[in-house]
Image 1 (cartoon, rainbow, N blue to C red):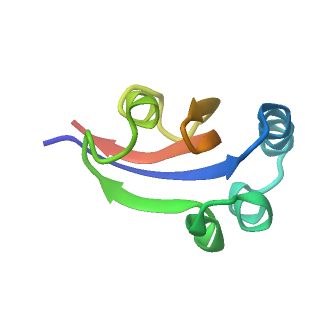
Image 2: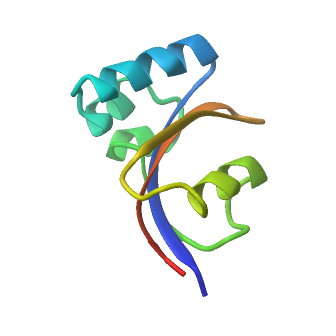
Image 3: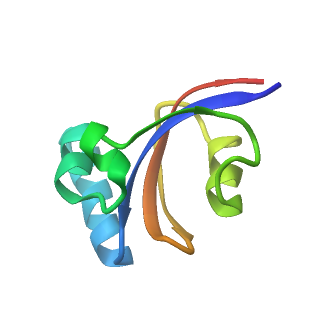
Length: 93
């Protein structure tokens, strides 16, 4: 069965999400930005969501996690919770 590990940053505003992505692309640390800005409780641990299987996350999030390249920041991804930057840290098929 497929499994993935991922981390994310959740914010309310798409423009701010884009701004954070630019900072990460420019070399700022994903985990530090998650701790400072993510509205998800996982922000305290650098956005780490641990390991999960298909269907355990909301549909829009799941679709990206199980198709995007590993170790590449994706987003903004809009869900019912807000806008996510997400990075798949590992995946098995």
